[in-house]
Image (cartoon, rainbow, N blue to C red; front, side, top):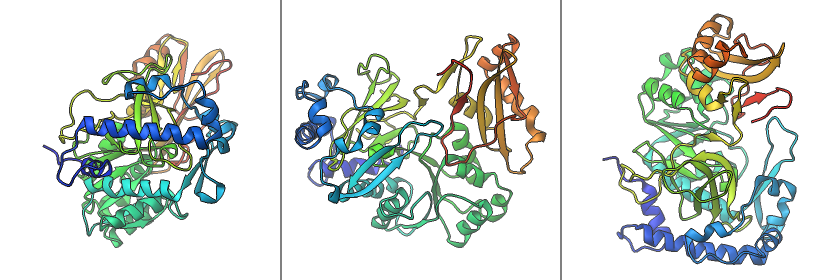
Length: 443
């Protein structure tokens, strides 16, 4: 049996269990209900937005009655983030501005107090205990220059664990980063999936440091199974996945040694899975949209925030033996599935799993457009050699292995442009998405 997630003992202590007492679902859910009541009273008093939003809503007598509360949406934050604030501007320690890539929508701004940031450091401290032990060294391939940034908070959490966190920042030069892994005697890497894949498939990786690592954590973007498998196979280490977003406080949920789903930080967040159309709360095992409520946030609490991410709670117990809920890996984003003229559907998740097994591929961009009254799927790729021309046939074969694409091509309504006309591989720091330029069409 895999080792019990360290989050269980941490959450047990957070909810007030005596030392050595085993966490139970009933104790945790009573704690969550109590914190929910406190949060609702707090935001009704302090937040102009929620004072108005919750005017006609009562206080749920049980967690099952969460459905009586209205949702909070990203657009509402974009409209006026300041109306969400429950504290004075002087108490805000960190403001994060999120721009929507590929759109002209106003940015979202999220505000955090020192207390809020401390909760995230505490989560990183205990969540990383699955991957590293005292005395080890972690290279953080994420932004960390600013106080309160994700790299800074992670380094602070690791320090409490007795682990050295070295903030590298995003990968700009793969060979330089690989050399640093050797020189700094790194045991664990934390970074974006595609950037870690770029390191793995760089020619210098095998020569410099293949046997050095003991674990890898992928974070900050959806991690295709094909990418995780490539990392695990090459480095011969377990690859853990973290699920979170800025709105959650940067940390949300992390895999345990069972490597089959995320355990949420349930002392700070209450997660639901809802039907994307009806908003109905779905039972464990059924996929839907991830919705969360902050239970301990002071600066900018969020009640039933719609993430747009698609996932499900697993009904079966976790192999590690924890009573914490287990969120299956995120399947993609709402609005990320595109209908083709043939009647089939295409998503970035399908493209990821088809293309990333190609050993030469580092990253790609997909544009769905129109040309001569026919739909065109253009793929621009980035390869380790810098020369993509020699790989077009392999890319095309991988795409044709997808039934939706094969059927559309056979029907004569879709053309594949694997030369990448009009597109190129995006920055690895930009979340991958199919860019739809067809007239009058959308997800």
